[in-house]
Amino acid sequence: MKNLAILLVFLFSASMMGQEVKPKFEKQGDFIKGTFYYDNGEVRQQGFYNAEGKLHGEWKSYDLDGNKIAMGQYKDGVKTGKWFFWNENKLSEVNYTDNTIATVTTWSNKSDFVVNMNN
Image (cartoon, rainbow, N blue to C red):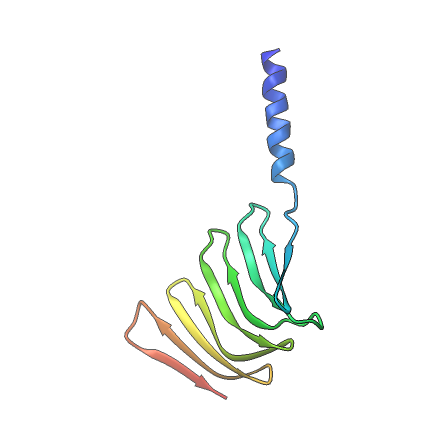
């Protein structure tokens, strides 16, 4: 009986870990807020859609531990303005014009220099 109880607990735990976490959509004013999740339940991405279903407004992405890894703006489905990307010990600022990278500036915690890449 004890072995059966242990087996049931194991099977229940395994089935819970294998379930996909479905995205959540909520109406907020004229926009729809979308939240997408990792399998562990942590938020993967969060942002807004306009009435036409295009990405619009602020979007954020997170890693598995809940740390922010990207943040930026969409306007009618097009990346625009400043986007920020965090990666290990670096922060990159990417400026978009008409969904195209215009400039990239990267700062590193491990050095005293800034890498500035302009197109």
